[in-house]
Image (tube, one colour):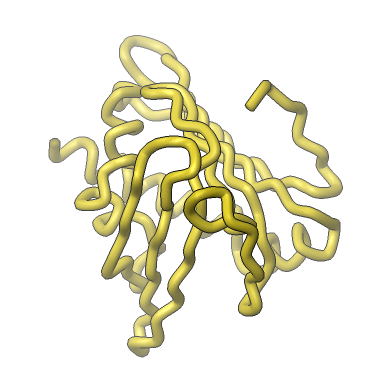
Length: 161
């Protein structure tokens, strides 16, 4: 995937910085045993995660509500550039197999990790949507707050490594 410019009518972007090194942030995003510790904003949880870290590999997670309802998500890794960029989509399943998301809307996540300051990371998470209605739905679900919260949880997990 080449670099792109987010479209404010279609995409949501979160930019944060941390004093945690990019390789640790990458590890937190690509290790299932770590993802289950931070991927859902508390009091939600992530009871399972499966990742095959190569283009066409799976990126599957299940989120659990505080009431115990589970929300599985099947996705496909598009790009895995170690330590710098992870791109996955819910529009495709493993092996680039197109799939229908009957519960919500498909989107593609572009997560970048750049060195920042003295050993820290500039973290950019972009959610790319097919249309303005999907972007609006994701925004109204709490994209900014939710993704910011899980970033804080990710940082907490990485500081314990």
